Length: 293
Image (cartoon, rainbow, N blue to C red):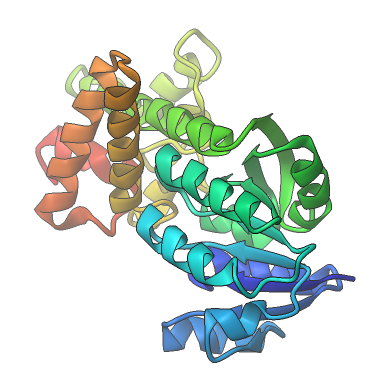
């Protein structure tokens, strides 16, 4: 059993912390939102008055925060008070530059660190089936893996500092682009008089097969567990997809990579989110493609 601090107990961090409790760890958490604190307390998580209080004496510190600036600020505070042999894990989705900066901060303080963003959404966080994409040294990854296995099903070491964030950004750029493509195909099928099920039956077993179609189909019916069958309740909200797509474009600009489809997907999700659908599941963009969003 380890003493673990979790900073950020929202839709992802809260269930992740709860799974650490189920795995037998002693978990102390902190969040600014009263609702998140209440749910976490109900899951057996001890609530601290601050991030620093939560982290004092912890063997492992996990952060799940909105953006790079938040991670930089929190890690800056934690580095000075963390146990000398503590492990810092950041599971936020942030820019690669910030990820590398906090790794450097941890290294300067003599701490092991891993950037470990996740894929799998709120359902995966609750079920403990997340995929963790990890960046950091072999030693840090080895220390982090048993902790991450309590919260996820697949733990991948992608490389050195920031490699986990790079993998997450590239993966979600694929996801954003592919969901638009799948949505456009269903819209065209509707105009041509082809049923949703017919297109699904063909494309899901042909060259059009992809996760956006077979696991997260944007129309009701073919995949009962998809948000399309629940009024596009997220899931993975459009505003979060837009955040990740913007990170991909920042990274592409910094690296000199050409990503025209990523750029277009970013523009379309920006329009969708600005139309009042920021909190809608990202697959709901099909309604905008129909002219209904």
